[in-house]
Length: 469
Image (cartoon, rainbow, N blue to C red; front, side, top):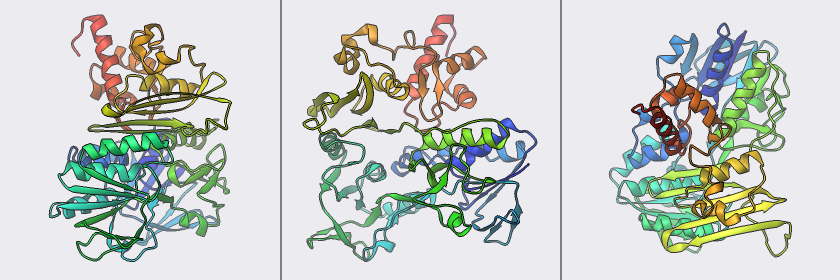
């Protein structure tokens, strides 16, 4: 079987790994438009902040491809697909034949249609990150346009480099898609404590030339030596559309991740399944695993993903999942449990329907993230003591974050679907540190927010056997 994967980002690289793990004989070629080795896009804000180097966010070792018999071509933009001849063409003149084609083209940054926008910096790729860092080295202040997840990460990263940062957002509060108004306001206060000036409810009308900043719709000028646009992303679907595949918001796929052409699959941010386009890493990796099963002749179905948005950076910890905004006066079917401590930047909110957790917001350090994520992911019954969910110390019998009480089926790493039982099996096979567990299970290699939990489990296992971790 000749498999060609278009796109060598987080979805494409994972698909190649998954297929090779299942089929040692497949002839695999991966074509990546970026010149860089595949890297973890989730951790780019750490590179921007200077807390990680580009090499530290790499997904695969450069030698991996040769060791596993995979042909990887970097800087090779695919310009066309001939579905009749089953070949793809690249900008440098290559024509690569395939039996099975997988599209993992990802998404691109949205550039708003305002004057001067093309002269600002997008924040999407490693090359974008490098350009921003270079510009920031000679800058004193920066303006970030867009207060979604990417904008918050960009602002936090630039502030970490010592710049005076102003974050501008059109909506009334930050991350309005994931957070309610109170959580958005508290997140803004947390960022303000890190040196980020927050302006919500403002519209940018123009990016000014040179180190001029931006002009708002009311005429006010917000100064800045560099301007970063974080106005969202859109799926890259042009290649699929030109090839005659069905495209709506993304490349439409079925439960096997097949497009309208059975020989062509799509995974990750470019794929649209059941009307949903997922912009997070965990769904992309879930899709890659299902597609790899089907491509290698096994039965598998993708049923959609339960989204958990995570932001875990220095002094900023956030998890949001499911339904987070409920009109409590009109919706009598939802039970909302909430705790807020503005002085400490803490906000915890649960949304419960029919005894099951359907949404949650956890802002600030919280020992219950793992427990609530497991409840949300499994759709299990919520314990009767709601306060014990928010404050586990009040109900020790319900505490499952402790490795002792955590069942082996509990999912520890959401991005890679790694359970406590898999970590235990890995430890029993000889893994005694985080690096070994990560190499065997991929735990901690996604957003990195599970690292403390994995360390706790490994340490607990070592203590039981009297072994040094």
